[in-house]
Length: 486
Image (cartoon, rainbow, N blue to C red; front, side):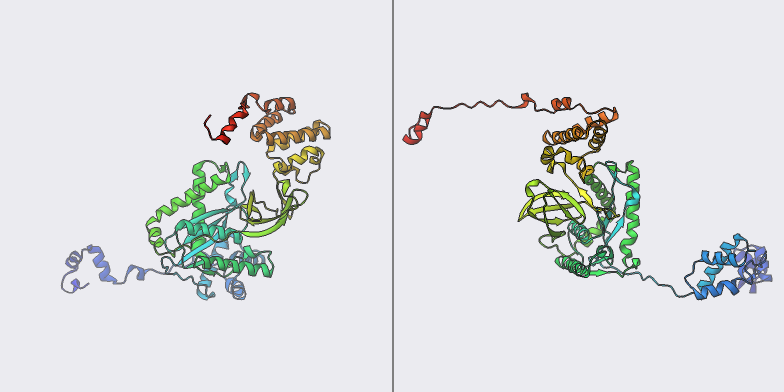
């Protein structure tokens, strides 16, 4: 348009590198194309005319949190003549109204994080992945730790619910894995860990958590209950972690694992691959972290139990068997997330897998037939009505065999044979091999051949060494008295 002051339209268009037709159009109307557009009018009548302002707006003003679908259902009830196709129109109109007249929404403020400053902890459910251990569904969740600046992650498989023990064990594993501790540790409100605890127990748990953080020089902080975005630095990575685990399970081709250790190793590999992508940042933050103390602090709960005449004790609504030589003794028990360590005085006796009670309130059972088999051999009929009979059988073929024995033989004989099979499995260390033979008998719909099994698992005389003791003459010992060589 500046060139037009001194040149003709064709020349000005050429100098401006536009077509002559465009130049003449601008000459006739210098407005921009967007300014020349005529506002589009409705092509059909407004279906919400006389309804939105009169009915919908009062509802939005009275209840700002009301869902659009609820408003749609109410409008259809008030005006049966309306077509269901107006739902999207109504939702768009409500969204526009709220943008102009709606209440203010909560604002998320992005934070600047310093290296070595903040570590986050949280738990996430994993039951949707349907992981199994030897065909048995694994009810578990993951403890997830993350350094906010570098993105270092550590994951620990938790078998029970959210608890202080699970938090303490997972957190310490993470700190020792990264080789240092951040200045601040943030978790959620720990409401799941406090559930069903009285006021004294909650206070004790709070003090123990504070002492744990103090041991590592960390300041404990918590986000407000029900405000997940305050812990967003760990909540969002939950989704990425579970997606990576899901992909790894699909590529593995199976969700079944031989044992819990194999599954934990699988999780560690997935997390290690994620950490390798942030390797340089993790190394940089590791150099800034606080040094670790000389040793870990306690990541367990401790209690005292008494072994009853049933060669067992009950703890947290779970029944545990122990060797009968401990009947009448008081044991000190350390409860971890996945195990129990038993002590008598300061001596460690054994480690038992930790059991869980059921959601319906019934007790759980952790039973080892080796603890009671010697007494059961003297009282085989006790097996018939034993409270924990199903848990006594170490493998499924043993239980199936007992069901067939009870159905085919008198109760006394069936119990005696079943107890003999359990004793054979224990004394001859053939539990797995015997289970395979019993499974074959169950599949063939026949009872076990006790004589053949006794012969098969009897001690092999050829395997016993022949020990020949040669007695020397007593006069040989005289050299010890005289000091002379023989």
